[in-house]
Length: 550
Image (tube, rainbow, N blue to C red; front, side, top):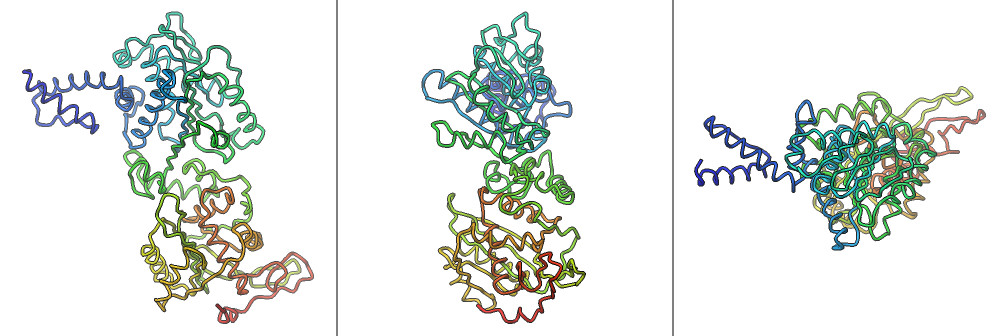
């Protein structure tokens, strides 16, 4: 092949490598073979310096069904490559601290293969004088899932040897738990909580140090959290990096603990969180649309939608939120408890007598701005029986819809009007506060909007506390088959520890407004059964609804 043709092919392959695709159609057999040979040689060279290329070169060797690329894989590869560079920069005194990063991904995201196997191999290949310490929830788990795979790749993979010919195991190496390299580096893996003796490390990776069995034990979580500082971090060298990778099981897991204690320090953690169904932050990270699969090449939207529906129907909404959305919820809840949540299991909502839209406004679209949130509620009756056998009619509310976003003022107005048009609400509630005032002024121009301007007189915590009796009475219902319902429930259970509280504000607003206007009964009021046998519960006539005053 002449030089000109070879240069053209090489340029084509460089571009193809960048795009991750090579098209050989139209080439002769001989030329195609030459292209493939050159591609293989170029990939070997590039994989030495580019972890993402290393993943693509090595993955098919480790995945029997074949490698399927995804945007999260490229993102994680870049983040890990930055970790490796930071260790070398810290070692050479160019920076003070190597990186600390945490990766939260759903089950089946290839996270352990990427981080705990391939990245460890690539790191040791590039730095055979450095040492890696790797931890799992048990020593057997760590050896089977990490240590043995890392050892075998370095020792037996022809691809790895071609990429990193100078990275070799010492001749007397047998153990998959602990081995040394001929250049002086090495590898140790163990279970969380184990005594780690021996040489210190340049790279610490913790992969699922909590199992499903230990994640929900306060005692076990506490042990792991305390052990990390004295047992794991104490084994690290000054120029060392820490990487945590897991699926979030619990709101007080090791990830939350470390993020909290290091948040005010000189070297805080960077969090890379990717939910199965992308939220706003995940969408921006991957450049994929909100509400869709994070890995559409492998998991179509319908797969996760079906999974979500199954978890919600089984009463495991919190488990879905933690495992798949990286958004753990307190086991019992905080202010609102899990036992206070009433689920509507029927496929369609009940017939309602009144529809109310509740809105929490924040129309700036900056990164620091809060979300605007819109919830739609319907009022319906249930017939109940008191302890004395008397029947009475109880008013309830059910969540019919929920949506939030960082909308500019005109977009927020459109969202509100669209909701009003769809649900023909009897009332639209908006708090008359800073951002809500402009929204109210705009909506006043439309006489078809039944606007109620609510002036809050207490803080968020006090308002939710005032709404608690209605939750405890199981008068607030959430459809179990709707994804928006899960978002609102999750935020309610997490409050006040949740990152967002926009939906909570809309819930407090609608419940307190309805109680103020005698639509929902409260403890000690007519229509509320407080369990005393001498009560004479009666129903509330719906004529009260026509007497609502602004």
